[in-house]
Length: 256
Image 1 (cartoon, one colour):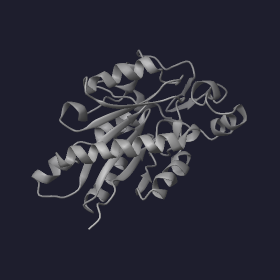
Image 2 (cartoon, rainbow, N blue to C red):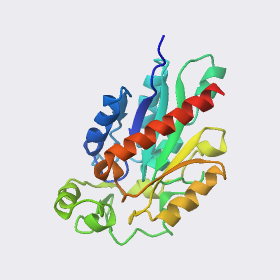
Image 3 (tube, rainbow, N blue to C red):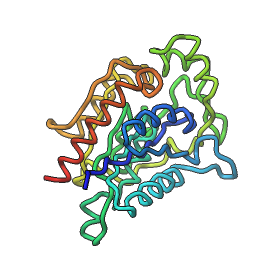
């Protein structure tokens, strides 16, 4: 019986609708890696109060659990703000924990792609120094990314005309997500993790990525891409190859 490829669950960052990741997810599917992009309730959400981090975490954990209950190996790919969402969503869903409970399937690897690795009890806002960044426009419950800044901040490795189009597709996110503390650190609880560095990222600069990834220890699995903040848009083929290699590491660790 052939080995089934892992299933990728993709966690977007702030402001970006899930649709922005679909072309990249399709590349993974083209290599026979099932992939699903999670729509985060806090991104463009409705209601009062707006959905927050807890709602985003539930959305991700529900998708992971669905695949795990189908006895699938799952790789979680987290981008930017999606790092804190993914971290919190991993609790109890890794293959080792599920095996103890007599269940098959589960998370074999969490991959942070220029993403926030937030220590338990701290928030994204604390990681940013306690204040929103200059290109974050807070309007009460809603926080917008200033679209005129995005081509240089997050899309700097795309042609200007294409960057402008993607910038126009961004929406708001619930302001509360940035001040809500993380509840779980997968890397500190024996769950395999990896990091993909984006070397020319202006939104989450490389030294900050490296500082966060240092939490994985000196023997961490890492990849480096010469890309801005959104390699799934600018160099999807190279990113696809990196995450497939990462999944192979996850499988080897599971088999060990």
